[in-house]
Amino acid sequence: MILLLDLGNTRLKFAMCDDGALIHRGAFAWDADIAGELARRWADGPRPTRIVGASVVDAARERAVSAAAERAFGMAPCWVRTPARACGVTNAYAEPHRLGIDRFLAMVDAWAEGRAPCVLASVGTALTLDALDANGHHLGGWIAPGPVLMQQSILGATAQVRPDHPGAVRDLADNTADGLASGCWQASAALIDRFATRSAPMLGGAPTVTLGGGDADVLAPLLEHRVVPVPDAVLRGLAVWARSQPQTDDFS
Image (tube, rainbow, N blue to C red; front, side, top):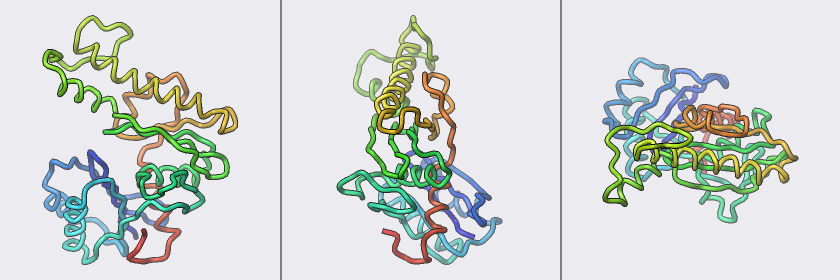
């Protein structure tokens, strides 16, 4: 039994990997009491024999999660760091560690599940896009603010854009709230469509377009390309990684 940890920008997600199946899942936002929340959620669950984590957050939050794991299970997580190559996937970055481990593990899941060649889109705090070819080679990608962060950035940088209600996505908005929401969500959708179109010739002409992340359900209907929903890609990629690696304290 392996405890998998996905420390994202917005939330911590976890699951137990039992012979490849993900069970006893959970998630919560970072504004919660990390130690208390994990102690409560892990109190009655199965005990792992290993703990493996992927993190895109700061060292302080990693330490807090490690301490909670030590208290709950008497062991610390092994933190996976992005490699040049692993589990059939080859990293396009000249400095491999600069590619987010979440993006790499999503490609590991895609390769393991036979979805390559594909375009991978993840929509959360950031919008990330990656192209993975039929040989498991990462061809590169794009990074942009996610639609919610786009809206927050406008609110933080302007004096008079102050919607008085949450906006809805419309083709032609006639008020500020709807205009802001529509512009940011449609911009994200257009970016994914453009990336998929630009990547297609290098991916055999008709790659699968996958969509994950916390805001995927909202964004999916706005896309012109047909997309395949892929929730929990990071946890599933982490499970593939953990099962393929010998037990060790060094996953870098």
